[in-house]
Length: 231
Image (spheres, one colour):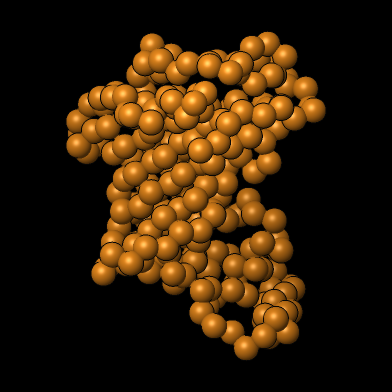
C-alpha cells in the first residue's frame, strides 16, 4: 500500500524507537516483531506517535474517524487526536454528522495514516462522551478564534446559504463575546473517548509483505492478546 521514502530534513531531538540513529527511516526490510511491542497497546501507540513527531510528520495527530449511522451507512473524516489516556479522545459538535452517528451507533474506527514513514495504526472500539468537566477544561485551552468558531458553527454538517452567511455568523459571535474574557464551551460541543477493543500496528515491508500486528480483547475487562495478520 505504502512504502518508505526519504525522511524530513529537520533533525530529531532524540532517537525514535525502532529507527536507526540520526532520525532516518528504517532500512528496506525492517521487521516489526512481536518482541518489539510493549505489552500495553496504548504505550506502544504513544511510542509510535513520538516517532512520527520526532521525524517531523505534518499533523501526526490527524486521524481518519469512520462512523456509521443506525442503518449501517458509513462516513469518514479527518479529526485531531487530543489525548490518549485509557482511550483516544477527540472533540466535535455533538450535532454534526459524526456526533449524530455516534449517538445512534456508538462504535468507530480510527486510522493514523503515517505514510511517509511506512506505518499505520488502526483502532476499533466503543465510543462514549467524556464528562462536561473534561470538555470545559480542554475548551479553555483552545485559541479564542477556535472557541468563537465553535459557537459560529452551531449547525455543523448542515447546508448553509453561502460563505458570506458563515462569515456573518462568526462576526455576530465575535461581537456577542467581545466584552467577555472567557468564552464558554457551547452546550452542543464536547469530547468523545474511543475505548479500544482492537489496535493494529502496520509497518511497510518489501514486496507488500507488510508486518501487521494486532492487539485484541473482548472488552475493557479482558486482557490483550497479540496476533499477526496476513498482509
